[in-house]
Length: 439
Image (cartoon, rainbow, N blue to C red):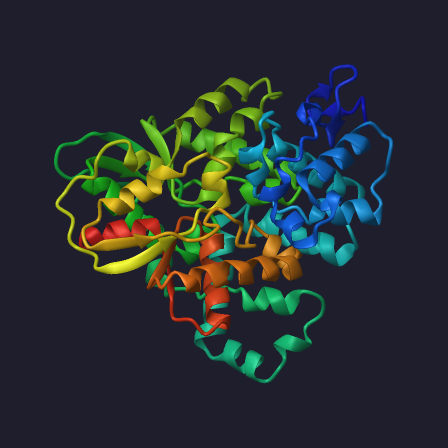
């Protein structure tokens, strides 16, 4: 592995790489252990190889060819949430997120699994995420399954519990699909209201578009209220974040290139993203495509234009007037906002501007809820442990709702609260702002 080749040719002599992806960053780790207290899996299991420091040791050993991908090493690496809390804690600036993505890509290269697993990954990563129309068709089928009563019957009869492997956990996490009107694409253009500030584009996303289309519409309304013309290119698709997190590196690259192509044509001032995992991934396009002679410079420029919705809106005071939203809420930091993008104060600053809204602190607010992209589907046991920990903290606050900014977190925490018998709601940050504007 020490002399691996990249997609565009041989890696530099002596460079450490996995799946052709550079992992030289492992040498920045000084093994100080400051990351241990911030790692959810280490906190739950207490084993060194389930800590960032232990996984860095595994990645370095794999890249140097000193060990192979045994069942044990795959298990320890696969249990990583990629929450990147260790990056926040690290004094040496270890690029842990890139390292674990390279390791997971290498796992997929060497151990793709049986025919069933490969077919399932192809159907999801290749077909559904790669083709918005097919994803919309699948969403319509899921809506029929739910609205017709078939889901209720399958759960009530115990048929779901009889499904093999982790499929029962997957079915339990199926989002409630909205009606067709709420799954309709966001308007290609939304005019600015009042004095015009400029023109921005929004990522409508893949799963976000068919499950949380209401959040996209609320995002366009709030941006327009604040003087921004909003464009939503209809030809956009998945940004590739789920593929990258799942070790599907080739498709992640292809989706990144397509995303850059689409948004470059808009000529906007910024690309605004309301899903934390997508925003963090798109901001990393410069590193992802650094070895691509055609896209490297374009990727860096594009990444510099990407803004999380909260950081974009918090750059200036919200335009008023905002109506009162008389609620008590608490805020959960999505991992890829607080750790991936280093945004902590902006969401709270926006909530503080909403009249009538009372915000109470959430213990371990920046602790992963266990969603982590597809983690709650691939590692349901650990995801459940982390979810129960999160739910205990949420219910201790006395809040009427928990506010966050990532679809995976919303679905995960909703599921945990439902299982706990709690009526606390889970809202996207933009829903609160939209209510303030009368939405």
